[in-house]
Image 1 (cartoon, rainbow, N blue to C red):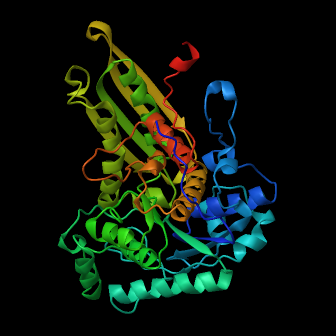
Image 2 (cartoon, rainbow, N blue to C red; image 1 turned 90 degrees about the vertical axis):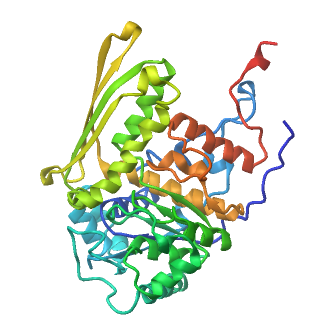
Image 3 (spheres, rainbow, N blue to C red; image 1 turned 90 degrees about the horizontal axis):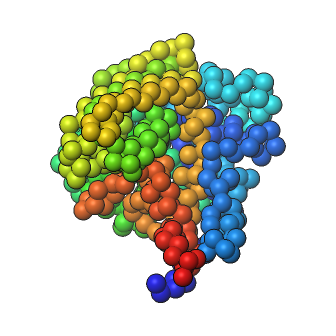
Length: 439
């Protein structure tokens, strides 16, 4: 393998502005968590960028620096956050209502959280049916609203002095939509913005505004946003990296752990039944069938891509897969996921796996949000543009080039991520072959 000298990565100088549509449970947990970590009140558990090491060279070399010491990432002290939301609550009030973090912790952070007030949001109840709020942009066409967002972005950068920006969608899941004529080219899309085309969703307006400003964009929800020709064209034209979609935080995280293990041992699957209960705003929104279908698609696809039924028809061709999400307010953000997995082994004899994952949705999602922000900023400083498939590790429905299938196996995704970092720094990629130790 010819030695790669790495890529030229601009230094992470100055503040990194993090712009987030949606000031709900995930965003407030992210913001409060960053502030708590800065003050020494907690550790960034769950974050690869802050906690993980990366092996370099041979195992005998014992070179395993922290990722944050290996690639030039923005520091937590350099992050400044701006948000949009349909409700007027500041970040402290929103965090108290979300009920994820203890109020005793939030009260210690109140001064910083209260200073973050959401800008009026772009909102369309046709896309999120079960909630509504007063803090919205009401006047003008969809293009006018895009221009208002562009103005918000510029004013935020001026106010904070941020040298670079990243945008991360943490708002509600929109109803399921497939690409329409308006999404086929940038020219069609901009015409559709002018004409208020109903097939253009609020998240697409945010992504358009971000990309027009040269701001990397990641979609933490399952609906269609940048995964269409028009916005892919704009990302390439503006040399901006994009990633998505839908945080891989709870039950699908478990699926991408278990399914590769079954496949590695050539164990068959008859059926996989998954159900969740959760009571936060995400659960309320997903009580609408249209929004649930967006989530159902990303939650269901992982098994097909990991197990490859067409290549292994004896094992996986006929497996039955069902996904359910039930809104149950008493649980709040403490989501519970049950999985019943019917497998079979030698001579077709049946066995079962039962998983009961009592997780905290936003506690799992917040470190993913941090990593995505820091890695997207790194990608932009490294001159990378368009789809960042190496960030598939973080998403249920990873974006990918149209001619290849998406990689869902979490262990392959992690290898891809770490090899991308090695490539950036001119280190040898690691294949785990290991024959050189035994020659």
